[in-house]
Image (tube, rainbow, N blue to C red; front, side, top):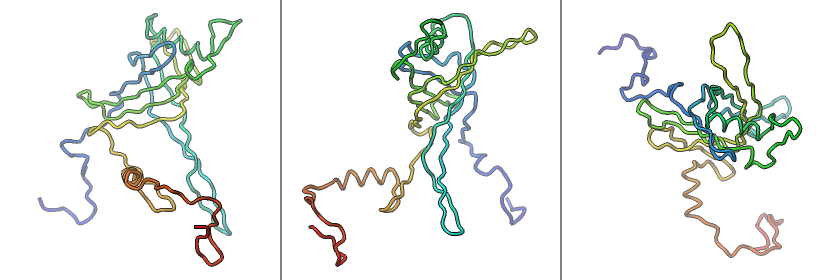
Length: 230
C-alpha cells in the first residue's frame, strides 16, 4: 500500500498487533494471607490499587548549578474498599483483623496486637487475562490497616454499604509470572560499571571471593603511587 506522506506514521502501530493483550482494570483479585485471624479471600473486594512508589530526591548544589539524584524509596499506602455484607466467615475475618490492630469492641481493654505476626499479613494482588492466566502479580509484605472508614449512610441512596481501608505495607515485590508478565531486567551501575541483574548473578557465580585475603595491617596508596602492605 503506498504511503500517503513522508512524516511520522499516525496510525495505531503496534497497538493493532493481533496477539496484543491489554491489562484490564476489572480483571484482578486481592487476598490477604498470613494473618493470625485467618486469610481474607478476594470475594468481597470492591476496589483496590496497584502499589505506589515514591523516590526521594537529593539536591546537589555546586556554584551556580544544581541537580538531583534519586534517594530512598517509599511505598505509599493504597486504598481498598470492601463490600460490607451479612455476617460470614470472610467478613468476620476482616473485622477481626481490624479489631486486632485496634480493639474497638472493648472500650475498657482497648488492646492492640504488639507483634507483626499479630497485626500484619501479606497482600497478594493478581491481574488476569480473559482466560484467567496471571499477567501480573504483586506481593505486599507486612500489610496492615492504617485507617478504616466504615462509610456514610444516606436515606436517599440505594448504594451498598462499604468499608474503606487505607493499607500500609513495608515493601512490595513484583513476582515473575512467566510469558504473560513483564520481563524486568534492572540495571545497576556503580564504580565498576553498569550491570544488569542477569550479568551480576553471572559474575557472582563465576568470580567468587578467593582466599587467602591480605592480612592487616596494610596501607592503600603508598607515597610512590603503589598499593603498600602486600
